[in-house]
Image (cartoon, rainbow, N blue to C red; front, top):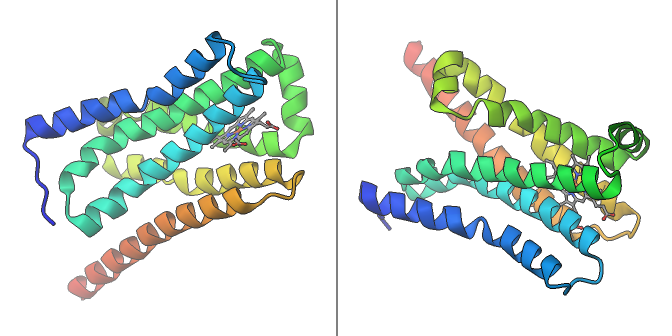
Length: 209
Ligand code: HEM
């Protein structure tokens, strides 16, 4: 089904998604401030972790959805979704640094090095930093398209690390359902990209012959 919104409609859709993406944070703040949570710290740490993972999935879903539906305008949403992934990841990290360690960076380091699931989450977050820092048009221009694309392939490392972090965290409770579901979703989204990239390379090689 073709759906080609005008530039104005596409901007409205983007603005609506921008607002919707803030609702999970608004809910967390509201429930905390109104004292409705039994374990607010755990709720916020887990909530922000969950939303980092959801936005990772949404960001990686843009290209496959665009290719399958031919809705090319979807590409306009990708950067914003990626930045929301970083935003919730940053809040997730800050909750950990604040509530778990009261901004004691040395204590935080000890914890990061001691608990493997946190080590892995931390590496995933650090790898998100260059992606967020190079998300502007000016940075794409400065790096050049090819180098920018190479750098953004870090997402192929970040996604498995995020799943490993989630898996390890759940391992204590022997509850792997969610990590398996998200692992399958992210695996499928990444494999589709690999498949399309290989088909493109093969076509280019055939044409060049
Ligand atoms: C890309 C980066 C990251 C992603 C996608 C991510 C995702 C998640 C997810 C999905 C959860 C489980 C939430 C639930 O139970 O529903 C979680 C929990 C947690 N994460 Fe992360 N995380 C990331 C980075 C980090 C970092 C950088 C740290 C700290 C240095 C961290 C520390 C934690 C902690 C302490 C928990 C809660 C464990 C518990 O309640 O027992 N994560 N994360």
